[in-house]
Amino acid sequence: MTTTFHNFETPWSEFTGEGENYDLYRPSYPAEVARVIIDHVTNKHLDGAIVDVGSGTGLFTRVLAAEVKGRLSVIGVDPNADMTHVAVKSAPSGLQITFRIAPAEQLPLPDRSVSAVAAATAAHRFDRPAFYNEVARTLLPGGILALVHNRHRYWDSPALAEYHEFVEQCISEYRRGTFTTAAGTYSTIDFYSELGADRRFEDVNVRHWNWEFDTSLSHFLALSFSSSLIQRSASAIGKQAVTEKLTEIFERYSQKGLLRQPHVTEVTFATKTNDRISRKMSAAVLTTDLASDGYHSGLIRVPISTGRSAFGWTAIPVISVKNGNGPCALLLGGCHGDEYEGQIALRLLSQELKCRTISGQVIIIPGLNGPAVHSGSRLSPFDDGNLNTAFPGVPIGKPTQVLAHFIEASLLPRAALVVDTHSGGHNVEYACCAMLPPISETTQRERLFELARVLGMPMTFVLDQEDHNAGSIFAACERVGVSAIAAELGGGATINIDALRFLTEGILRILAYLKILREPARKSDTETILIRRLPISETVCAPESGLFQPAVNPGDEVEADQIAGWIHNIEAPWSSPKEVRFSRGGKILCRRLPVPTMQGDGLFKLGVDWR
Image (cartoon, rainbow, N blue to C red):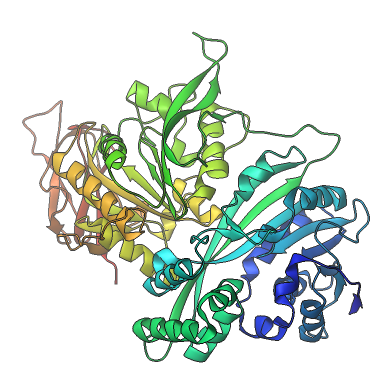
């Protein structure tokens, strides 16, 4: 390990003398973030260095080096000598890391020598235009930039919400969700838009990793005082007063001597363009500014070419309601054009939010697959595209592919939660259900179960792993790192009034639970039942063609060998109808609506107890 020392007068001097505590008590970063960076470099066959800018005590530098495993050189660059001394001491001898002391705006690196540049909880303090110039200068074409930030999930923790409320009282200009700037002030920063507007970068996207850890009181206090927010609060009202308040928060919310701290690691990725190739941009265009406060509406314009119009575009309406900082909820309806409960519910909510006070943002797209909505069909009439199998899409291609790419690359990264509303369309009727993706990670599962309880549908089913669809919205959310919950309710290409009420009231409760709505989160009157939907291989299907007479309805409980219905022979009405029986018991989630039935048509889907 080598270190180069210089002296720099920088705004980072407030960290001088704090290196030991910072390194000891600050949480590190998910290894998955480093793997994304290293996988990109490997897939692009790049052989330049991996650089961590604003490396501090080397928390993320060490994560990168552990994933590189000596294949490429790893360099940490930071302007603060004290923090860098600690980084040198803390780096294990087996990791090949070089540390250099220099500002982000003057990287001590040759042109086109770097495969990846990362900045972990640091870029908000940079002179970013100058930093981006240095990144563009030093990155190899195809190299990756990763702006990494660990942040409190205060919307998931009453303790952290009170913590930030206290800081807001101590520091008048601070608001939760803002960053400390190079000037020492506080401001919101949209890294995604900054890089998206810079033609030297492409494939800009944002991903999230949720995680949490427990702290003792001593750890909680030491961790808090390693933060510039708490240091400035102590300067304002005194260290003793701050310590007493933090202790009060800990004692109020801790359990068995430990305080759970939910965090999210948010990463904005961008790829350096090839200087000799024009930037590849999505063919879809958004006509409204999602970063602005207020009530705004606009369109996603997707190019089309049809027999009637050789060139033109189709429009998908978008509504944004935003007020300051806070979580963003993305509400989607009309992924299939003949599913109407969600489309109407979201239109009603867009009006309701005009008279509600929010903190954060709600983005509403009532008719996501616009062409299918206009034609009243499940699929797009332009390309027979099923939007819920089209992700991640392509930036230039068929309309459904382009729309899927725009949603995954430009909209999902903004959200803390996606609520995707579905119903049965023309052919299927669903009981009022919430739907969750296949979940293996315990913490994520419990959080989604809690959201399902807040949504308040009578049933909540989890998809079986066998039904995992890499082209679905659920899969897109998983790739981006955003939580998602869906509704499946009603159907028949009509409006189920009870389903509409369940959905609109449930989404309002979720917005209050996320603290986007500034009002108490009300408890649902309905206790949801958690079940697992049986995989597609266990769908009850018609054994022969004819006229199907059902014996049960969605929501009914059935037993193994119970009659599901009868299929009547069209040509021989004098013959006895064919009995259809359930091979196993469970809850009826949905049933086929049309009476004329062909052999192999799905008749019922069942769910069984989650446990």
